[in-house]
Length: 101
Image (cartoon, rainbow, N blue to C red; front, side, top):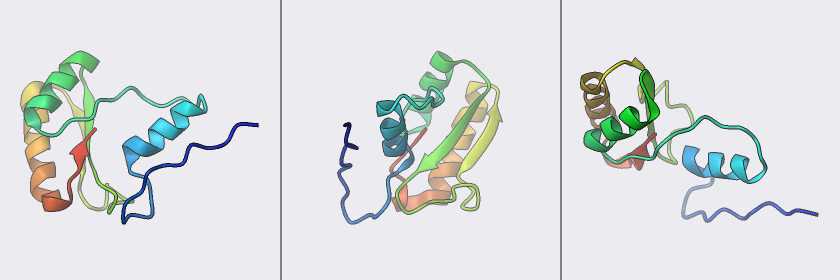
C-alpha cells in the first residue's frame, strides 16, 4: 500500500500550488507544465521555454483564491506582457509573495 508523502509545512496549514502539484505528480495525476520563477526576467525566460501564450500566477500559502487577490494574469502573448504581469503580481502580493508559476 502506498502512503502519501508527508509535506513539510511551516506555520501554514495548506500546501502552496507548487507543493500541491508535486503531490499530484507523485500519484500520476496530470498537471500542466509550469516553471517556478521569482521575478519578471525569470518569468520571461520560462515563458519562452514553454511557448506563448502563458498564464502567470502569484503563489503563496496565504492565498487559496488567487483570482480574488488579483494574482492571476491570463493570455500573456509576449515578453513585454509577461514582464508587466510579473510586476503587477509583485505589487499586489507584497511581502507574502513566495514566487510565481
